[in-house]
Amino acid sequence: MAAMSCSSEQLASLFGPNTTNAAAAADYICSQFTVVSDRFVDTAYAVDSTYLLFSAYLVFSMQLGFAMLCAGSVRAKNTMNIMLTNVLDAAAGGLFYYLFGFAFAFGAPSNGFIGRHFFGLKDVPTSSFDYSFFLYQWAFAIAAAGITSGSIAERTQFVAYLIYSSFLTGFVYPVVSHWFWSADGWASAANTGNLLFGSGVIDFAGSGVVHMVGGIAGLYGALIEGPRIGRFDHSGRAIALRGHSASLVVLGTFLLWFGWYGFNPGSFTKILSPYTSGNYYGQWSAVGRTAVTTTLAGCTAALTTLFGKRILSGHWNVTDVCNGLLGGFAAITAGCSVVEPWAAVICGFVAALVLIGCNRLAEKVKFDDPLEAAQLHGGCGAWGIIFTALFATEKYVNEVYPGKPGRPYGLFMGGGGRLLGAHIIQILVIIGWVSATMGPLFYGLHKLKLLRISEEDEMAGMDMTRHGGFAYVYEDDAHKHGIQMRRIEPSPNTAL
Image (cartoon, rainbow, N blue to C red; front, side, top):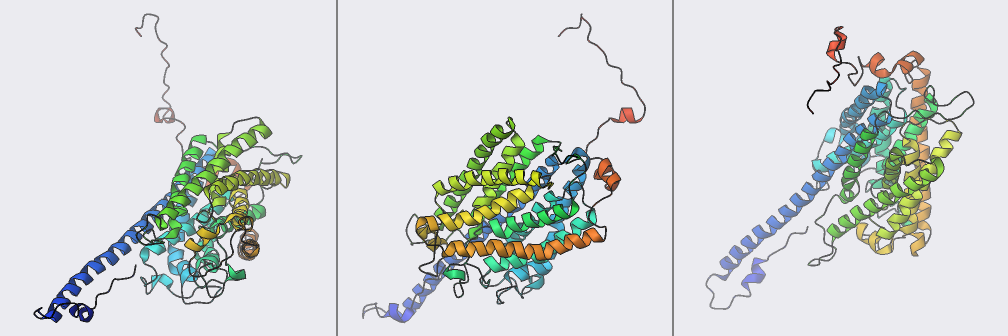
């Protein structure tokens, strides 16, 4: 927010000739005016920083959602393992993003490929961002790592989790976020001096940057490891290895839904930005609209999945509906701020079909992903990027991405095909970058026998073989000590 100014010389000239010491009076009035002006500027910084911190807390709460979703989606014998990996995604990701990742992502000034300042948060805060911005971006980075952990669940060595999570959050993900979010990125919509096809890529909250990166990394991990034992029979027919708790899946889904209101609306990073001063309509309205489009896409995808899976399988399956809901959220994440609410309904509907189709394809090629993470985040994320290029509106694009008049917008909204061209390039370069980095990493871990656990450990469950015991107590202490508890049948004379 620009500070208001007061000139004592100009003010003194307005006093009449009978005013005693007009210059002193003007100086005093201007000093008080400056104090009030500074208070407004300070308040604006505080409001925006508080909004960003609150959004960061919401995004971080998604880690709990991931943990619950993962725990419910795996078998009980692997619960402790998957919970521990979710904790370490946050912990290892926090350290490596602090040391390297944030600098690679937002270390300006830099070239278009990678950042080169602010390692270990040196010289932060700056005029561009404060510590709250780092916290917010860290929460995004560990979300990408959490996506990958679901794809390789129930059969991966613990050391492999530590290695891939650190590499993903410290290098692979930050480079992609630099390309598309940094003001210096070669395809960033914020880089108004060098826009790809005159538009840059509009990936507002990360359908590509976060979801595709995590999904494709998980794809390579699951492909190189191979399916879990028993996932496909000798004839190649898919056998369902259902998770042990639908309750945890639903709990995790609602926590992720809640956190997505920090993920998408929070990506504005500011809320106190009027488009026209003194008007009821401003960035706070765009924040609200973004929350609405996010909600509608998820709801539509959930209902479409509900009826689609009912037709295909004959069941009303709550876990399928939860995955469909999350697929809608992953898809709308790119264009949530620049599309109309009605377009979000289309986004969610198609996202559900994409997820169902990707799951059918995965079964055909014997690809095993316990959480459908590669299909959900990779497939629906890619659809979200295409969707944005088709339905982004001119008004919202210019409001959310100011500073470059005449930007291309959605093809179906009359904006031509340049934005679509930029977004197709985004999909291709993300696939190429993650393939060139995470693919060799997982293959190297596989060759070093650091990736997959032994067949005996997998059959017994990693909780017992790797983590010292099961997550749940299956028998009471009395049974442990050989004490038999006799069941007492109610007497006919017993009063009810």
